Amino acid sequence: MPVEGPDLGLAEELLSWKSLNVPGISLTMAPGTATRVQVREATLSDFFARIIVSPQGRLNLQDLLKPDAAVPVSTPATRAATEPAALAAQVTVGPINLVNGKVLFSDHFIKPNYSADLTELNGKLGQFASESQGGVVQLADLALRGRAEGTATLEVTGKVNPLAKPLALDIQGKVRDLDLAPLTAYSVKYAGYGIERGKLSMDVKYTVQPDGQLAASNNLVLNQLGFGDKVEGAPNSLPVKLAVALLADSKGVIDLNLPISGSLNDPQFSIGAVVWKVITNLIGKALTAPFALLTHAFGGGNGGQDMSNVVFAPGSSELMPAAVQGLDQIAKALLDKPALRVTVVGTASLDAERDALKRERLKAQILAEKRRRAAVSGQDAEATVAAVTEAEYAALLKNVYRRADITKPRNIVGLAKDIPQAEMEKLLLASITVNEDAMRTLALQRGVVVKDYLASRKLTSERLFLGAAKTVAPGADWKPRAELSVTNR
Image 1 (cartoon, rainbow, N blue to C red):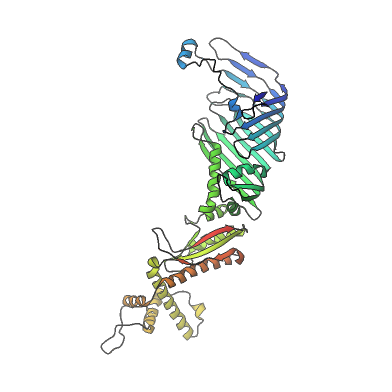
Image 2: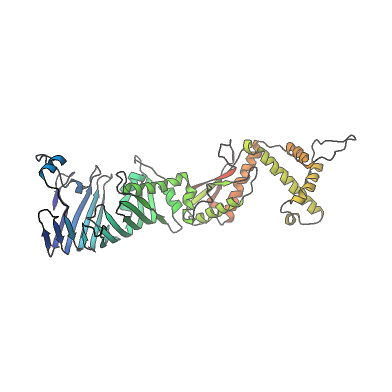
């Protein structure tokens, strides 16, 4: 069956076959009753189909039927006056056997153009009918196998009814080892980079309910995916190289699950648009939330905390339990992705942490006093001193106060007099100086602590970098932290 090519200006074969075997067709027509058509088991052998997407994004199948300008168009009113109400034809077809088929697909919407060959298509579609039984659409068994681009294996199984209105189907599809380099036209258009190499294996499942609701799952496995240089002038540019480094495991394999849902009755709903939106959102996370992407395979997240920020208590450079948990998760993910490098930048804020840092320094003085007393008594100071208990605090604070070179309240004979614990703390805190340099030191300590902890998790020093510490003016949601960033080689 040739068709006039909408863009080529010449006849192009749309559908052909060497053999079409139909044992029989039954047609029943009677006034006042629905026409009944039954096509018995058919076999289509050595068939060919040509599918083209035009530069305007239309399928050539949409242009097969064109209205004849010479034939007046009837209105619903005139039809109602001149024609009896038509009953929908009741059609039964199948089963249909497909033998050694080929489908050639070309996309002229993408620049440069893309073409794909589906060959060696063999399979069977069971019997299906336009009429439901008991209000339930009857689905026919489908089994189709073939090859894509000559190398990848293709398999589609499940149930479908092409005549059902609305569409009804429940199918699963598998593609194995599809070479991705021929798809470089798509990656240039949508991502700004060409594909140098890689293979795709895919498992999809699509279910459409009678109400038009679609539920779909798409499991994609990308093996050894590699992109070339950025294409200047491309309509989009996405951080695909970083995304690949974040998602690929140590063997260069990316395993993605992309669920899709929506209503086919919604004119704004498009499966292709939804799939691409899911993928681009995922790639976009390489810039906006790289550590969420990095830890995706390991459960992701850490109690809702942003894993690119390691949060500290105000004034402190000690890792908290939640931070340790998050760093363990990050380290685990990084061990599986050797192409990634991490930079740690410690931050601190004088406005937000001045008082807290003073208290931390007072705590350090009290702990030092406990070590001094342990050493004087002949004990191992480091082994003995782990923390200061509440019972020890008052006596240690009094010793620190007594030894401090500060102005103290004195009695009538000039000796330092005893004062309440709260007043001792107040005088000691007032004597501690905290400035921008102190905050910069605190920020540096935070960066070092995080970097050292990641190193202790078996990450090599070549993959860990300490960025310049910085002091900041706190915003409404700012927390004391060290910031992590990730890059690929």
